[in-house]
Image (cartoon, rainbow, N blue to C red; front, side):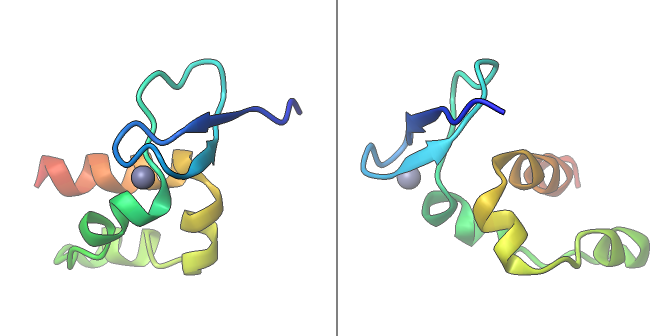
Length: 72
Ligand SMILES: [Zn+2]
């Protein structure tokens, strides 16, 4: 895997592990608030109930969760 990092598009302070596909990428700190949104749906709550560390390290996981949060 290529170790590629991109500067956060929002705060422009933190570097985020990114892939060449990520054009607009945000760091964990910038997404933390939205990520902590309470999920009401039992199944999805279970699905996203993974260690916080995973979300910190993986922007792809953050993306999936945020897409779900925005869709509700
Ligand atoms: Zn940021």
